[in-house]
Image (cartoon, rainbow, N blue to C red; front, side):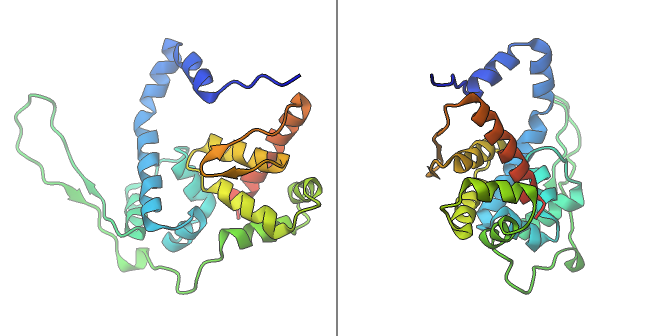
Length: 217
């Protein structure tokens, strides 16, 4: 018997029907909007998350937290991220609606040359980093190899690299889970390949652990 799959949209709609949850969600909207803009900023640079983190001199795990909305960057961090993509940051002060006040000039956040220096050497590719992890003795890497004995490390790494390109955290999670289950990811679509409840839970747990490991590379 096939397991019943509930979409994230349905879960989200049900949760937001609670006024208290809706109020808390709305309060976080600016943070998530900022996170989405920073993802778009990095996409404009044409770099992966790991490559962009190396360019601006921070760990990929920190950039991942910022892009997921879990960490609000300081102004100097925003300026560094913007500079990494060839942009700059300005803060605009907007008066209350209907109130006549003297116009305040936008505040541009300066960034010194010492704060941002692109790496002189080409960054290690995501696939190479993932492959190096999969070859390690880490328990998570061992479990992944056991699930894909018929595939090479580079083949698995290439599939996982595509999963990491998804902008949304839940998309990355289910894409990785499907790779572990042996299904295909591509073109932004996600196709479930497991009907067994126990295996589904095991796959999701392993996918979460794997994403945490990859984010720290």
